[in-house]
Image (cartoon, rainbow, N blue to C red; front, top):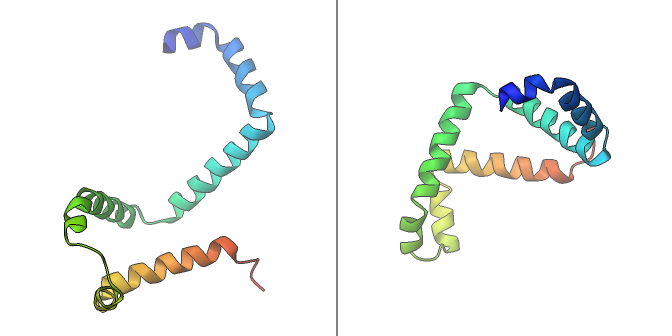
Length: 104
């Protein structure tokens, strides 16, 4: 495949250039650059730990379902854990960022 791309690189560059100038693809590229900016600003070790913990949480989802529903009292007791509380605060801050206008 790479050999074929190299043999027809002028055609490939032409098609790529045409696609880049389409409005929907410009939005896609801007989004990719935004995600790149976000990921490059986060400490890689912190991001690695987050991803590992997220994967473990997803894997344990069935066990959590078996524990039954989550009442307000259970949520309140969970929030006493500093890690849970910090995580909820981060999520709330991110949620606020979706609707927050520019800083005043």
